[in-house]
Length: 277
Image 1 (cartoon, helix red, strand yellow):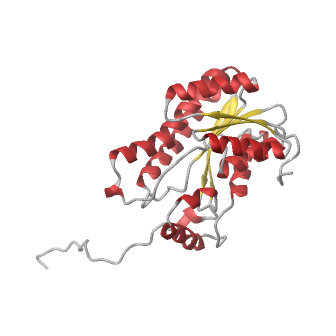
Image 2 (image 1 turned 135 degrees about the horizontal axis):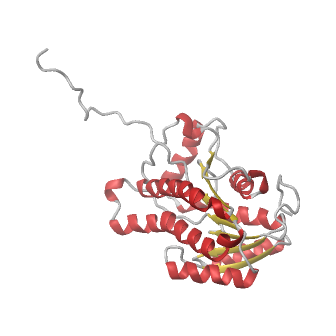
Image 3 (image 1 turned 120 degrees about the horizontal axis):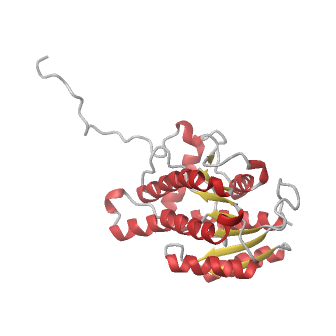
């Protein structure tokens, strides 16, 4: 049994499609949705993640399907949505959680690396939202939650994903306005520094930085996958019926004042002075 703060059967008779649903925040969200009555469809490029995710959900008594999907490819997205509808009957909820990035100074990012991150984090969210809207939400409404990041003051060492996530924040607002008349709500969740499975993919030096930077927030720690999932579920739920076009920050106040990277000591930007003085 998965522990959740929400009412039992909150999502009964609902089907949720979660991209990147086999690991990390996506899997935690999928687990809670299934425990609350939803049928969950996990989408991922990696078959192993799908199989493990489905098994994890089924062990807790939930119902889940896994579909291989490359969200950067329009045809793959179309096939994924069609298969989800075939297996589950419909889609009521969409969580655009899949993403990917790598730490690098901006000057060292190749165009190939840049495009890969933009296409995964921004284009993927657009393609999936568009396809689910056209196939399901246009006729009966629905709810979309995009998972972005704390990029409000830039994203040093990850400029590619910062730009992409800022784009999704704006896309969220645009779609909320365009699709509101169809009964579709579109919101985002912006996690701060979270202790998720994604941390394991980073080098030790970058992981150490993440843990030390977490001391700059008001909780004095990293967030948890459960805390992010709780925010996602709230925005998907009827309790958020009057909320659309919003981005909820789940970061213990980190984005209010704390720079991700403190200024370096240098003298490369001399002051302007009137030479006549």
